[in-house]
Amino acid sequence: MSSTNSPSNPTQGLKRPRNDTGNKVTVVLGAQWGDEGKGKVVDLLATQSDLVCRCQGGNNAGHTVVVEGTEYDFHLLPSGIINPKSICVIGNGVVIHLPGLFEEAEKNEKKGLKGWEKRLIVSDRAHLVFDFHQVVDGIQETQRQATEGKIIGTTKKGIGPTYTSKASRIGLRVCDLLGDFKEFSTKFKNLVAQYQSMYSSLTVDTDTQLKKLKEYGERLRPMVRDGVYYMYEALHGPPKKILVEGANAALLDIDFGTYPFVTSSNCTVGGACTGLGIPPLNIGEVYGVSKAYTTRVGIGAFPTEQLNATGELLQTRGHEVGVTTGRKRRCGWLDLVILRYAHMINGFTAIALTKLDILDVLDEIKVGVAYKINGKRIPHFPANMELLHKVEVEYETFPGWKSDTSAARKWNDLPQKAQNYIRFVENHIGVPIKWVGVGKSRECMIQMF
Image (tube, rainbow, N blue to C red; front, side):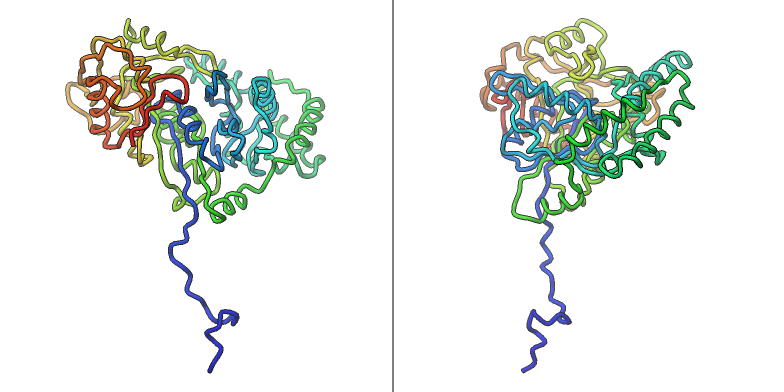
């Protein structure tokens, strides 16, 4: 009897199982212009997650999470860091300002965050945001104001200039900082010189900066891993619940957002793959987060904006002030054109609709269902900003429920008129609504299925 069919024979090719794709990743993404309450959804899911990952953006993001009455603010740290059982990953697609990272951790430590440095993994391929990137961010905004009379409204956290360095192949990464420091210092000085040649007013004390960076590098070293291998092991090891926390939102995406009033990374679902090094096959649930109305920070087109008493009411009742910038947010009615557009790009498997309670006092509630130009409906969300500024919104009007929903904990606790509003939204986008938010804390998320 021949032994060729024994598995120990290396020439015998064994048929591989065809279904071993590994663990699936759940992705949480903003479906509007940011500030939708993603932190809350992530926090809800993070309590059962083994791994919580950030894949893009930097400390231009702001997620507030309330746990047992304490408010934690996260900008760069994945908000799953408050779950003592979760490991948090900062992926290669994130840009990291080290002073910002440690300062944020220390602020949250004072509020009760414990053992974070044992639970944080940082990809060695992530790019570094330097202080001068932040200065340049401010200079660029000043120049825009002077030449075009308008700014983008960046957070001045140096995110855009860092992604610019990355795309120009002159950026420096975590692995550079942890490698030969002499080599790093030379590259850093060259980078500074390059920026100074473009911005004559830029002054950088390179020696002081390098000294600080060396210290930060040593503090960071124990947390740094090869992100690709780390994620591969996580996907193909024992069953794990893996969560990806998107920052910013679909309409701020560098490719799909309201360009140029956008952020500088891909905050749609593709960013999860490129920003962590994971295959599309491993993407499972994709949850879109949207408010029950719309807000936008900074400038740029906003078709359903209400520059009136309604807008003011939403702003004050919703405490619509940016976590990262402290800027007042612009407010308006829910826009289903942008939600459908966000769904086309991301393929949401479910939606979380937050801050429904803010609408409790309104007599009537409007929802934008289509855009018109010269009285004719347009089939697409316009790429061109001049066009987007010109659109007229077609609204569907609903009677307000005029009652307090903040104590609702299940679907049947919601007034019939609020249920009708939610069902309309769900049917119009064609995506089930899995959660409805009626307040700030964890308990205020009504889970529907």
